[in-house]
Length: 277
Length: 277
Image (tube, rainbow over all chains, first blue to last red; front, side, top):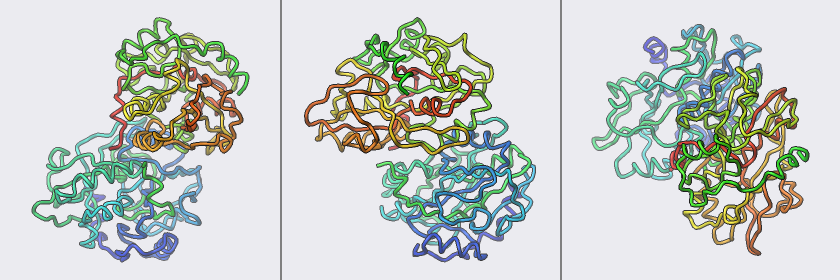
């Protein structure tokens, strides 16, 4: 994943400043359509954010099966019909233009990272919108859990783990996780609040020693930015919707379009819609 | 759905008597393989039960998309590779023989309801195991909620509703629900306990007046048996894994195999594995 990491690295700056979370989702999408780019954590607080992966129809079954077999990293919120760039989750949104930044992949290689993908679009693309952990950050905040990467104006750190996903057809690859440092007194609240939102990755997959996931150095994430931790903080790892991009790298489908890590679709859906109780 | 209903009706008797829920799952499957038939509510308490639908590979994407777009009635627990009759959810199980009773469908018509389907099997069948509300009955019982149909030795009543599922490719059809009468003092516990188990239909889709779902007469279910209610009981409706069978009837794929309503695969998985917190 290193070369893909390097392409992103110099862009991992927060140009998006909605730390108050006050933007309406359609206003956020309009700004991204107009060229604003950057991580979307904290944008339009309370509105569900989504990862994007679009693959040719010939690969759609493998991708949908991969998501079904790996529901923690790949909870599917919507699937389009082939060629469509609209979704019922975001009124008037154009999936080709309304995310801050995209990635274009050929044969598993990252070939471009444009601000919109109309020129790359194909009539046979099926788009998957996958739950994003930014969605549960409002719930964490309400429970008092500090969101370090938002406080520090950085993208969330993400890591490729040593855990392989369950393969599906021609697709295989490792699970990617996002990490948030959590003070011990908030750990049970963090687990409870995110557990109630299984459609956006649910409860953590691991808490504590990163080496249990095969992560060597928390300060060198594979995507996003390293985040400063307080001495007592426990690193808490949630399955991440960048996992399909790791599957693209490992499995080399002929073509794919994804969001750039951390730069999500902001939908109209409210986080509460995905809360199970 | 009426003709399919009539085929089942005379068989809707409880031949299976594990009301203590003491059978081990592999012992339950062995009994069904040997010919025992009947509704599986209460069997092997605490073990996850699953609906089955097997369709030709050519229809697998439509079915998986239908399930993804309708996660309340069709939460997918496992999908096999084409032709396989095994699942990681049930060690040593043969999906062709280990359910109590099956249904065989041609062009949307029910053509047979055999005790095993080895003679009907095809190498291109992809099998979907879908969460079943019997799974959450252990949690309901622990919370004190009476399970009327188990107490009365009947199959759970199921109804075809007036609510259409979100279509997917060539598949469309109405949502099917199961109904349990719940005393008012247990209603919030019933909603909470099932909400924590979204992989087996989660919280109810409706409580109270059946006409809101287009159900005319609770005493005439489309599948399963009518159940006696206490005067104060509130009818509570959960989305049901028989919904894919209603889609088969409405959409007429050339071939399908399903379980008979209420006669499920008993897996080795523990209900607790599907609890979100």
